[in-house]
Length: 492
Image 1 (spheres, rainbow, N blue to C red):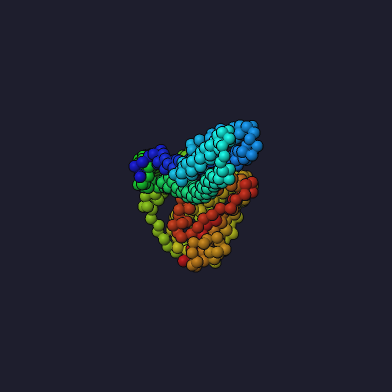
Image 2: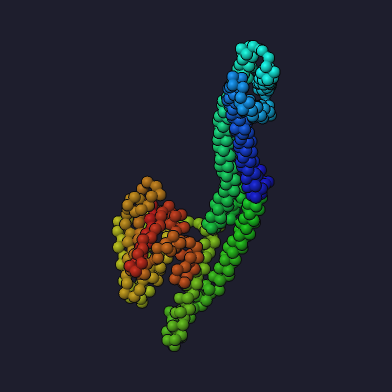
């Protein structure tokens, strides 16, 4: 079935449903035709036979009455009426012989015709005797004629009874046919509905499941995971789509590897000359060559700018190199027992000049009795530098940046990674512009920038470092009022 296209699957499903509906329609038409034939037989044969039989019986009795009046009175008008009725009787007998279609009915018609003809002959014979004026036994003729008429009417009564029995039998047969047709129609209709549902579910499942698999694979690609090769038992169209998806994964993986190699190579190539420029600028600084060697204030300012920009570029290059090592799983952590207080003071001292320049108040609230934590000092310092640097960057003049550190249990700190020892929670609060709610889920993404400055790697790297230390990092923000970044580090 997997070799059939979606169109073929749908066509086969609809064909199966059509065949059941066609069978249902054909069966219904046949049964309706059968009922129609029975109804037509009742109305055109049996009911007509009963009507003509009753008419014949009445006509025979009327004819006998006119015949008796003629015998008594000798009035030829009565005999003429007798003859006129005879014409109608002959027509009805002929019509009955055409209508009846069973041997027993035909035998009764023959009896009716025979007895009636004998009656007519007896009347005609008596009429000739009356005209001749001869003597004859009227009582004998009267008895014979009466017996013949009774025989005729009895045969007609039997014919009527058989016809009524046939009507009852046909009505019962119609009822059975209708009941059977109702059951069969219901069974076929239910079968068609069930089959339609099963076919729809089967087609939906064989199409929907591969598509869901493709959606999951696409999500993995959006997460930067390009090693997801799909082998899906599916219709040819979706299988071709899966093959194209696998080809896309391979190409994206190669492009990602090329990008990582390029970034790593370029970063290494940039870091060396930038380091040389920085050292050269340091060698030309007044602290190295003396105040008299650089007489121009402009020269000193330019050297300061060179040093600062070199530091910025080297920091960006180092972050890109860290990213490459993280993606390759090659970054090493030199874990040791260390005090976060010392690291915080070190990071704060780095940004104090910039805070003074921007007239931003720096407030440090640290619990001096904090226990030691197992950290890589260099990497944790990188986290603090990034969070403090971002806080200064997005805080306006005369604003404030506060950094706190305190001992918490994991539940109150919001760190639910496990239920072990306590944690040291570090928080960096600023009075800056805040982060738009729609951007919060993306702030830790690689190369995601909201200010148009930097590399967009700082928070991503900071989060990876915190997680590698067994901690957690989160943000609380309100636009126009400020942002608080918090992270935890487990106690030793």
